[in-house]
Image (cartoon, one colour):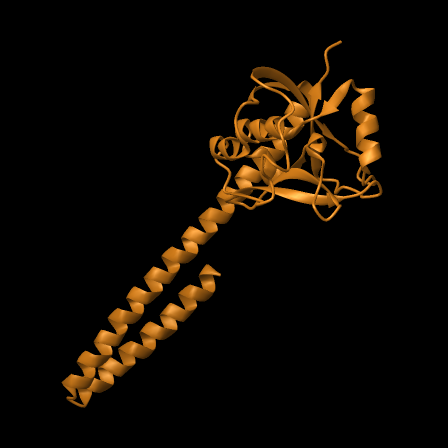
Length: 227
């Protein structure tokens, strides 16, 4: 890409220099000045475009770095688990603000996802990954795995607190909390999940049923049950 830009610049400058020489030889100074003005404007435009291209590339590179960091962190936490502070008394809007999320599905409200717990707690969270590349787990597969490991699905306050604590993980994985499962007004079931672009983080809703299969890059946030 840079080689092409350089080649175009050389060709353009050569053409403009030739025009200036022709103008000078023909004693047409007005034309010469006009060509010089065009040259200055063109150089300014190219420099500006090059700067914008550089910034875009820097943003892409930064996003990839954050994504890789999210993948690394998720795998690490999935092996060890982590304690997360959860404030169950926060409204959904307050939890979204505290987590610095950039966007949220408008139907994710306190009315549709009412709190089932109160107070503050230190919650031991273990994210669950299905590493088998051939497996697209169903809800039953995930729940069975959680039960086997003495875990319960994370509820909305826990999911949002986890995303706030580890904002880069959702850049590498979709992060779901099956404890947020809710029946919507149209009768369908939805589950809250965290997702992201390279620069922005969101909270969305996934429509599901008992036969729905999850993508392999989904991380299921779960809470360790007391023995």
